[in-house]
Length: 246
Image (cartoon, rainbow, N blue to C red; front, side, top):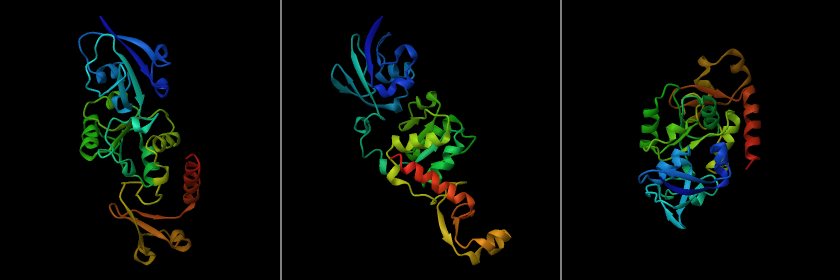
């Protein structure tokens, strides 16, 4: 039986099992598995990994582990320069997302903030992986196994179960606070909104809406109409709260 000595950055603690918290432990194995295989064997998706050093030398996820190796693993969230992807392959200034089936509320929040977010409540895992890969989207999920698929290049394992806390996680992970552009996307379909004259949609407005509101937007894709109703102030308060966390 061979073994390596792992050291995981402290930001991995909440993902490691109880006996491995602290980040330093011996791991036994057979054969010549890749670093990706070993890291995911301890339940850390490869999408969480920044740079990896073996015996002081930088390696990538395809490195084949050797008996006695000392492996240091840095988390993407701990320091963004430790992302093994090249900056020209992933644009942090234009992050686009696809969300797992149970993240409908998070999808709504991200769209409200102006982020391109694909979602369908009956996507299969294969579809999520294919869309994420083909469109260069970040896959957001709480399913570790899904992020361990080899075809997934960009993804993030959400820690919280609460949608509002999940929003903060995503904004912090990808440093998106300064890219918030509220009320530019349709909450229903993710399409772009554009202003529309009230007179052109009078026949679609309820009597009280027609009486008290004068500014409207319409989705260019699904034709849904938006206006600054009572919910607007609550949304503004939520957005202001998020920005103050930056």
